[in-house]
Image 1: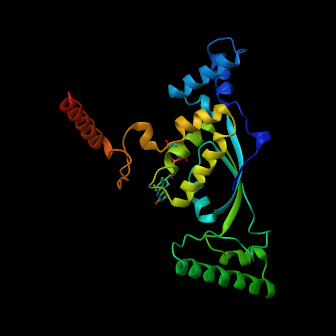
Image 2: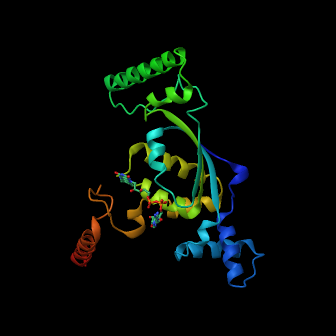
Image 3: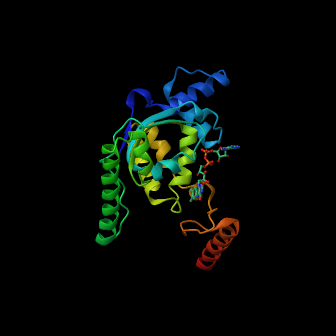
Length: 236
Ligand SMILES: Cc1cc2nc3c(=O)[nH]c(=O)nc-3n(C[C@H](O)[C@H](O)[C@H](O)COP(=O)(O)OP(=O)(O)OC[C@H]3O[C@@H](n4cnc5c(N)ncnc54)[C@H](O)[C@@H]3O)c2cc1C
């Protein structure tokens, strides 16, 4: 679950960007509509230092430590805090179950149950929580407070909405996008136009194992443009 922290997350990122850019150009920054227009223009032009001013602060929970480990590879424009395995009793931890059949789900549930039981036994044997935590699995749920600026978030979305990204982090990225889409009209514009897989921003896929959503590499893009051209000329 994603909770956008409303008192820390602005509703008007475009106006904010436009206002700051207006200062640089000695423009009238009292007109909100003009600020929004200028903000959109900055993003469309790729003047992305401006996108480092708006920030989003959110609580992310119900995702696995493994998924959050992947999120932590994004280091630019980001700050985070995570629930403590030293101070919290994780005997009854929740976890992500990726099983696609009942048997698989049951096997995972059994394994998690065993870990939980052993965590409890270690506590009974007098071990500190911070030491018991060494047996906790990557699949366990964790909770973090994540702060990221708009520039970092656009990049995160480009990478993590990609079909080649891990399923769970794709779901996480999709949930953040969905929450921000309804947060304000300005966020909706950003979500619709910029929170997309990277192939949709450059016109081709850079992944070795392309999912087929867009042509693979520049050669693929060139071939698809020629195909389109052939179809157009054949139709005329
Ligand atoms: C499909 C997929 C598979 C992946 N597989 C693996 C894997 O097997 N193992 C693994 O470890 N990771 C893997 N990753 C994570 C990936 O390699 C990146 O670490 C992660 O996506 C963060 O990307 P980033 O560094 O661009 O993001 P950010 O940290 O947000 O950085 C943003 C941008 O800032 C610049 N930048 C960041 N750090 C520096 C720096 N130190 N010096 C100069 N410029 C910098 C770069 O231009 C970068 O793109 C995978 C990601 C995807 C989407």
